[in-house]
Image 1: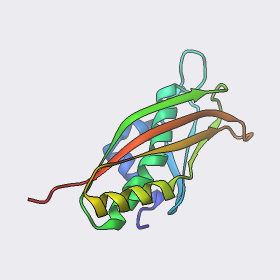
Image 2 (image 1 turned 90 degrees about the horizontal axis):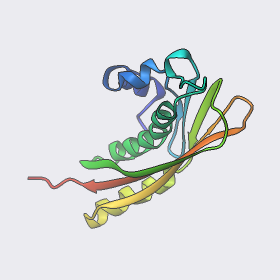
Image 3 (image 1 turned 135 degrees about the vertical axis):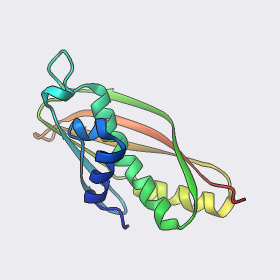
Image 4 (image 1 turned 45 degrees about the horizontal axis):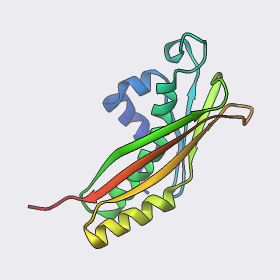
Length: 153
């Protein structure tokens, strides 16, 4: 996979500046997983002095979207990607450093292969779990990604 944390973080700065300003940073990515970290700070807090849900969502979505992007790039094909649906569960106040991890690279790999083989759009649900520095789960996000080979004209 030619996507690196450094390249993804530069992408955030220039293409998704709100995520970058809130402190969302990619820490690790490989073929099966992606890890993104964000620290609770004044700029990303809610009125209850914890991390705003949307900042958690940006970090969680990035763990899944980076994996999708990586497999699309590796395929050498023009493939569209879109979040069709998502949901989240919050189980603890998000304070301190929150780390989101998605380990569903194998699922998107299969979806990309299938859309290339059939030409039909595919959907895949990917999960990202956020934990605090004590290893306690604070939130879980699920994203339904759609991928489809673009028609060449």
